[in-house]
Image 1: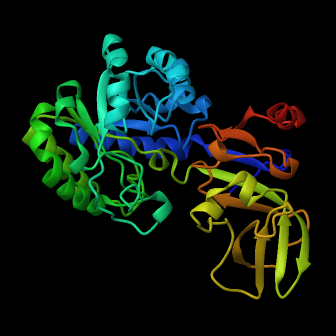
Image 2: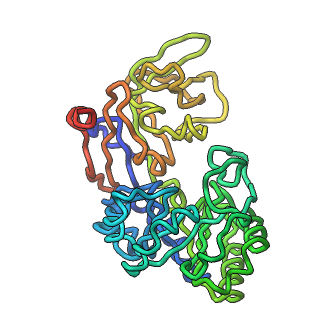
Image 3: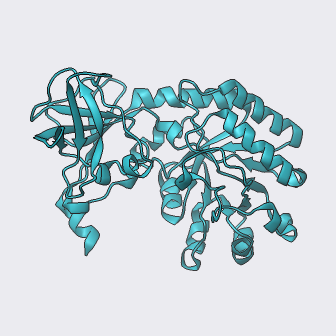
Length: 373
């Protein structure tokens, strides 16, 4: 992969050709299934790319006021909003931007439904099918004591006349078989109400653009629910939109030795790719191999002892000044960056269709300073 030596590291690079490759897959899923697909801005909200993404998708889903406003200003189309709880001080402004408001509890729906309906907004409610299909507890809304969604035992049927749709989001980086399993539970518990609805939102966590994703099964599932219940079906992927389309380019600052070789980079897991520690996962690095004598732990340049990105094998020794390119760095990276230890934020570049790298956003000391006081 070509890296421009004149661009200072660290920086994110979003490849628009790879982004379009994902968007074409999503476009084909829409065409074949009749579903609507939304961008989950919580995973990727670099609005420079919204004009491109909006050519393919039906709108966005937001987690609150700021994302909804961003969608209104730069994306357009349908704007869906879900939050575990809404603030009285923000709700009136939120109604200026949102088309669909999804509530997390009976109490929240009761509190805000009159305002939403008066503003001609569609109301939905998040349901909890109580069906776990994953092992990542931090990302499992169906885990015990989860605060996400209403269980069937707690659904207030008197509120159904105000509700246009059900929303559930139970998956994380999963295939269509997990959706199928989840829908069995959803239909068994909530299916008797489907005839009163206009739409179902299958949420996010669908790895639709992963090479092994079972698109045939997905299309079959969507068509079944559309025809059986005459419902609009929504999907709201975040990762799948930008999967494998982004990179983080860093430079080796030093190599130290303590039982193994440790390369200190000018980037950081905790500051620039927090999901590495939260998920956790080890991001791919271009040019690494399965096994070699040149074994390194790649680490960040902060005081956090655990600021380690992962262990890798290289075909030759790393040296100061070498570039390290992390893959799959568009999703849940740019939206989660922070300036712990006074670390600067990586610049953002777009690699255009003609392979020219264009600066999208550059950060400096003022971005750190003005955040704090």
